[in-house]
Length: 299
Image 1: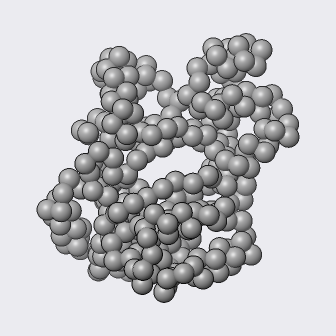
Image 2 (image 1 turned 60 degrees about the horizontal axis):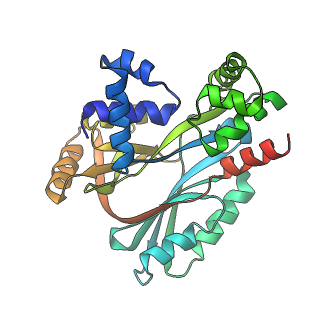
Image 3 (image 1 turned 60 degrees about the vertical axis):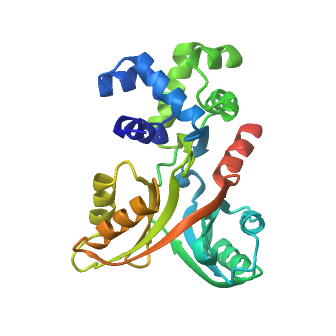
């Protein structure tokens, strides 16, 4: 994967319905070349699917990144499945030293307390570290029955062409295009590529970065990570409660990982870096996606 591939992935994460022609104009290569690159990313497993989900603003949903420290007695696959048995958990992963990371969503303090209690009482868990993280909330808008009618076939295939949506719904292609544009520009939902961290031979890992908040803001650190490590960086979660960032990166091997971590530690604003190496991970059903499916069924 080269820099152009990584840039295309970023665009598809933001909106997987972006056309080959739009990407062609943006990057100065043919639409066919863009198509071939995306097919290669799909076949290699870097892109393992596509998703459509409501924005957090549409459901009032907060997001959580957490680490569970265990005594190391559990089977990793079994433990990840148990973490994911909570309907709040979107993804969970086993890392080195008996640590498990997860991303979850919740509505209000009651659900947060219930989620925390569930995680802390899992067998072998010794400590739970929970961080509400800063994210783009999108916007809230009222969806009409016609909006939901157009979106129903997109639940099965978020990249379904406009012409096929028109045939399924009985609407004109022009009207379908306008309705989808309204939803995208209104910030009510997001069409995203689903990316596989650690696909092929890459080694996924988390760096837990503590920084000096008297000298820098969280955006200073997160922007620097994205700028200096564009091919290694996949996702960053910024804690809303303390000056800590959890950044998901990939390396070619242990030597590459060590070099990157040493480089991060040398940043003048970074005060501490800890590393967790990925072993196994799994994705689970999204709370917002299930809410969205219910809205479509009830229209």
